[in-house]
Image 1 (tube, rainbow, N blue to C red):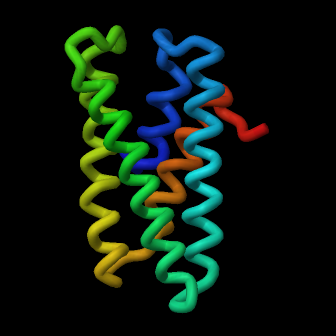
Image 2: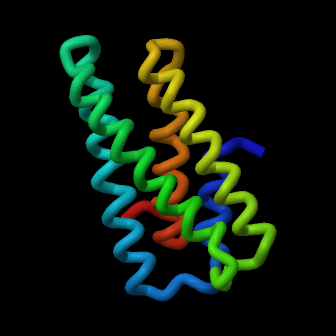
Length: 124
């Protein structure tokens, strides 16, 4: 399954998320996704902005991973494992971006899929 479809499906079907927590998550993911997109559009001249945006995205996904690794997390185990997997992918892919070996596009696609999932399948 494609990473972006996995991310969207995970957030769309998550029963343990309240409206308030979805809103906070949506705002955080949206803000960081905008930073990633804007920095990537600048090309080589925006590398420092890209480094900062990738760092913020990694922090966000580290937070998600920490949250789903907590034994008190109420999400189903399979959902927690899938979110943790996306966090691991994000960390590994971020390294490739920073070393100039990969595009930021997969991270943008994953984050956009999470946003669609948080909004019930469509972006508002």
